[in-house]
Length: 130
Image (cartoon, rainbow, N blue to C red):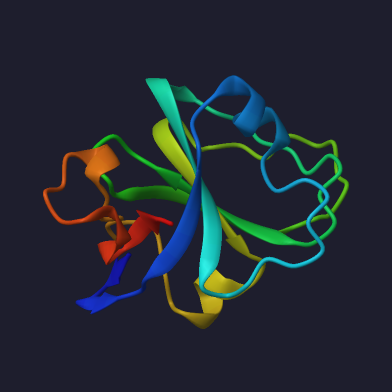
């Protein structure tokens, strides 16, 4: 991610299959500050999320097809079944440790750099994979 020229690097697990996306970060007791999970969808559409069986608060970063951040849901409530709105059609969602986006000043309009969004840089440059 890029906040006014300052990169934030994360080691992310990729949730590509329906099974991986259904499970997400459920049942995890800890999400390290340098880690997360990137959900990439085959089509661009609104993608509501929830916190069912998720033990810790998360920040959900909703990402446009061009890699810009469309919306951020901060400190989502563990175990909540209430839908968390993507704010419109998105290509991907990055789940991070709750409170991290505010702490690192990551905001709407910032860019996520990853091959998923057509970037030629290695995926671990910003929101990369293992």
